[in-house]
Length: 367
Image (tube, rainbow, N blue to C red; front, side, top):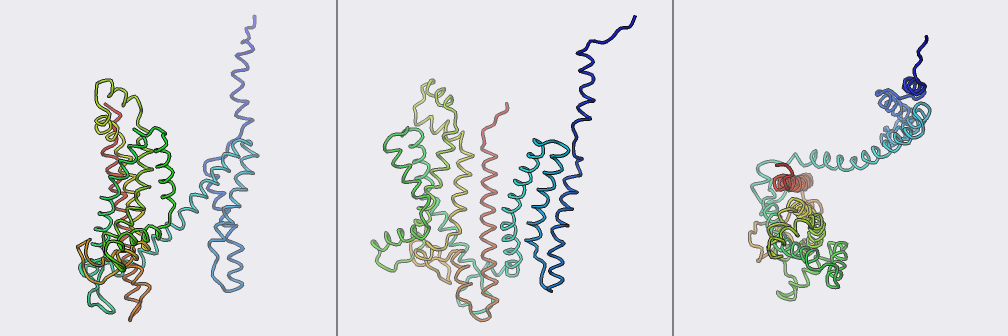
C-alpha cells in the first residue's frame, strides 16, 4: 500500500524551491561593483578629453555622468533579475542617495575651504588682541568675538521671552481665534523679510530716539531680535502642539490651574525641542552682516558697552577685512578667513550645546 502526501502538503513543500528558482537576487557586492564600473566609464571620456586638450580633468562632469550610468545599470539589471518592484526600489534609493551627496558637496567644500584658509591666523594673537593701531600684519579679532557674543546674547534675551510667550498664547489660549490668526499671519510675514529690512527698522527706531547716524551694539541686538522672534515662535509653537492633550487634561483633573499646567507640564515636556529651536534661531542670526553694518557699525577698538559707541562683530569684521585690504593684502585676507572659521566654530558649538540640552531634558520614556 502506497501512502501519498496530501496535495496541499506537496504544493507547500515545492513552493520554496520553485520560488528560489524563479526569483533571483543580486549579490550584495553587485551595487558596489556597478558603481565602480559606472564611475570608471564616466571618467574615461573626460580623461581622454583632458589629455587631448591639455586641460584639467572635469571632475564634476565625470561624477555626474558616472552617477547617471549607475542608475541606468542598476535599474536594468535589477529589473531583469529581481523584477520591476525591486528595480524601482533600487532606482529611487540611488536617486535619494545622489541627492544627499549633491547636498553635501557645497557644505563639505565650504568647510574645507574655510579651514584650509583660516588656520594660518588661528593663533593666540588672533584671540588676544584687537585691531586698534594695527596696520598690515598682526592684530586680532578679540573685539569682534566679544562684540558678537554680547550682541547675540542681548538679541536672545530680547527675542526668546517674546517668542515663547507668543507661542504659548497661540497654542494654549488663542485656539484659532481672530487674534491668533492675525499673529500667525504676521509671524509668517516676518519669517520671510530680508535681514536688511530688520536693520533699517532698528536703525530708524534708534535714529528717532538718539538722532541720525547713531551706531551702538544694542541697536544691532534689536535688529537680530526681529529676525529671531518668528523663528522662535514657529519652532516653539510646533513643539507645544506635540505635547499630548491627555497630559493637560490629567493636570486639570487634579485641580491645577492652567498657567501652572503650562509651566509645570507643557513646557518641561517640550523643553528639548524648544531649546533646539532657540539655538537654531541664534545660529541663523549670528552670521548676519547687513543689519549690523547699519546699526552696530564697525570699529577697531574694544567695546564692552552695548549702549555706547560702535561695536565690532565677526561677520562685519570678516567683511571689512576682505573689502578694505591694505598692505600687505595677504594679512587682511588671512584675518578674514580666520574670522569666518571662528564664526563657524561658534555656530557648531551652539548646535552641539542644543543637542546636549535636548538629550538631557528630553522626556524619559522608560521607568
